[in-house]
Length: 288
Image 1 (cartoon, one colour):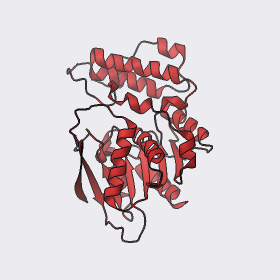
Image 2 (tube, rainbow, N blue to C red; image 1 turned 180 degrees about the horizontal axis):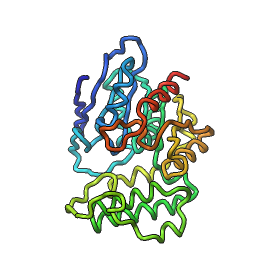
Image 3 (cartoon, one colour; image 1 turned 45 degrees about the vertical axis):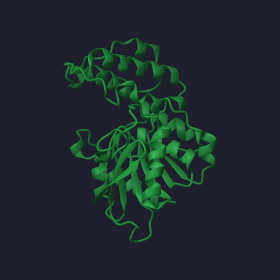
Image 4 (cartoon, helix red, strand yellow; image 1 turned 90 degrees about the horizontal axis):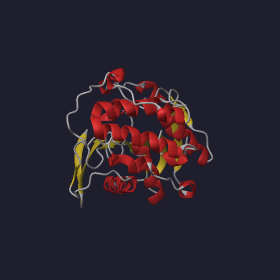
């Protein structure tokens, strides 16, 4: 693995190249991105693709990538321009792209703006409210856990986040009327350390879930788009957004093993089934 820094006008973007560039066998590089997760979240997957040159990176303001623009919010269009610059720096496009969670939203923005950057996109559970029939209720549920975070700190906010993301089916008035759970119910600390900069719980990433995909542009792009959903996620929030997006694109979502973090290894504390996940990802990428 070699670490590189791409110096852009308002961010030093740090990325890792696992394998040779140009690739030894002429196959496209495989780029893996998340949001708000940095490159460390793909450690398990990188080891399971020893035959591919894999590129991971830290999104701006996360991990090793230092922002110089004074901003703290995470707009998918801005993140997409960063990934576009990264692909250009690699000099090996178009690439194959596995993108999960907020990274999948970035990837949709990338394909919309730069449709020739990506040959195959596997978009794993992008959390976007706009495709849901209960989008307004989802926004209210998000506002509730964000408010808990602002009022009482990380444990309260995370407990509310987990309650929302583990709810099955549409968000009902009954769900919205429930008090947010005690952090102890999820093993979370109730103490407030005073910080309010968590990218998942604060308003900094609201632009991710508020993103509205350009369905016509995505359908017109030369990119093969595969929407992926975890078998354990089908009725939860990100599972429903994946299924709804796939329907909008005129396809059926491809079911992957495990849950929203199904690609993660045991070092994450949220282990999925990384080997089975990688096997399915390999099948999808090889099926073009």
